[in-house]
Image 1 (cartoon, rainbow, N blue to C red):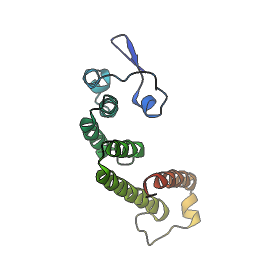
Image 2 (cartoon, rainbow, N blue to C red; image 1 turned 135 degrees about the horizontal axis):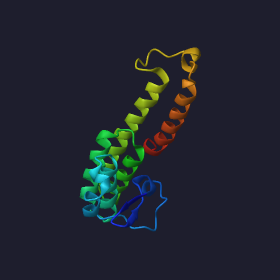
Image 3 (tube, rainbow, N blue to C red; image 1 turned 180 degrees about the vertical axis):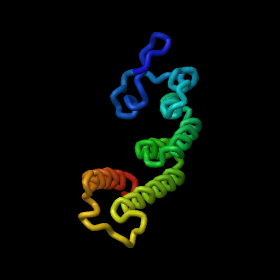
Length: 155
């Protein structure tokens, strides 16, 4: 939560996770003058994307999502929202291209997790486990990517 002008404002994650459904988002103008944008963090572009979407300024929402995703290429919920905007605006071809590119990114990351940089050189179990339990984290990452692959590669 952030308090601005005596008003409590949930952080971007609360809106994205659906925790805040009844509260209205700040307008883009209010967001630009909020501490979220003064801190030069990632909350500003993310909140702007959500706000433009909420106030149905879809062209600006697309610009903000694309800008955010340029810096956060693996933020899959952003691609999902962008896909929804394209479909809702009748831009089916743009949605298809986005889904295809996102699917390819996910498949590439899964291959990288499995084989490392050189796909032809698979790793042994002892290399995978290591002292820090890297294998477990790779498995969790792969399971998450597999789930997103189901979302974007199902067509």
